[in-house]
Image 1 (tube, rainbow, N blue to C red):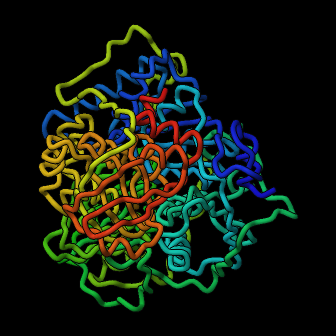
Image 2 (image 1 turned 45 degrees about the vertical axis):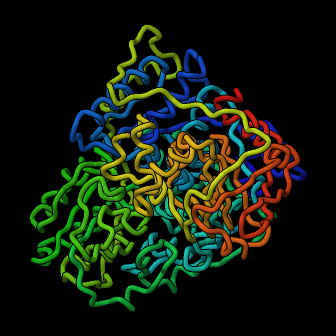
Length: 636
């Protein structure tokens, strides 16, 4: 068996990998962040469970920590009270970014982790099967329910050789993205193997598994080996170590080899993590802004490397540089070794330990600016500035470019050794003594921005609808449900729904409501790889609230497809992809027999003014039941 098979088989509670297309697995740990956690906990509350039933649940506040207006502060109070009541550990704003913190303090090899954030696979860096999902799936897991995934195929990414100076883990995952792209990988797990694995420390492995989310895979995983043991021992958690290696005769469905010694510095050019180019090919391009950090590259190893490059020098006068560390632990280490002073002297802005700039919550670039960033996504407009040109690079490339003001490859930087001991300060993790038990008498704090969770209605057999919007390929959840300034409405679906598809069509919300009043259901028409990116379940929940009952796309990404099912929206794909071209926005669609089609798990014909088109949906028995009931909450 390989590493993924060993962990999954130990957690299998439903299905047989040899015959079933869907498996149910037991979830040991869950995590949420504040942008998705409020809805997850509202849904958990509605289930009537008195406390969490999984081994560990942690609520992190790391996304909307900038408190302009009352909404974010109110949400944080709500999250804290929910955590205390139900036995959830609460990580206060300022403690750090969920994925970095969980890797440091709670992640365990051989366990399963489900998180309401698409970059939860960061945990794969220590041999954990860590998967991103929608908030309602996390609620079910906290209540002790199984999580369901497509029976995976497993691809070995075989690493050989070792990285040269100036090349790092970011370049490894960009090489994998260059090969496999951001679509077509649904249902795969990428497992990293080979002699090169031993040359990568845990932060480097975590960078690779974190950004594996951009591939669209279920998750990515490294073995748990002596490097893992040393990391956990340095965190004072050696007791959490379990060795998990692939058997000598382990088999894989596919294999791809990366020669670490041959890698050069790479970048993801606008506007996709899969648009990979060499740094050499864009060298000399003027850079206006450089942002270093986010959950992808905010470890001590990453920021210490930047400090070593900048030491005794100053950033270019016309280039803005901001640095967001991943945790207080990282900041404490940088302060102790003098790196923090180095960065400040070099002219860097020290930002809060939060996701901030990655999600466009602050530090948006100026109009038409070129921004180099070490985070994981460069979708158009995600930075908060639609006209900005965002490139994803390694910390080494970012630091070298900060000194020159133009894209510059790094040469000659010394590697940062893995610390023998990390400073441990868990004081900003609250309610650790009540984890799993809770304080039932706690009163939940509900500000005026926290609304009721809307529920879907059972699927009718005959529906008359309209193509409420037609969008193209690679539509992300940021297109569907914008973050940034709008994210503060996440606890209030009626308010947040006003901004569905705002980056594409600001009239979508009003048009959907008019259609609902006219007795029509709304249908979304999309191209390839619909729903890329964030696990943001609001990208399905808010459309459901607006009367969307079906999505018809050329292909749909895994997490978003699961979220559509969870909120009673039928995920159709075209039998003939060319039918996409014939459908027009505003066209009337007759979905006669849609319930029968879902029950039969097959094709159906949709009648339109321009002709008939055939669509199909392939669902498990569980998914059929959920959709027919009108969504997961209605089905429980």
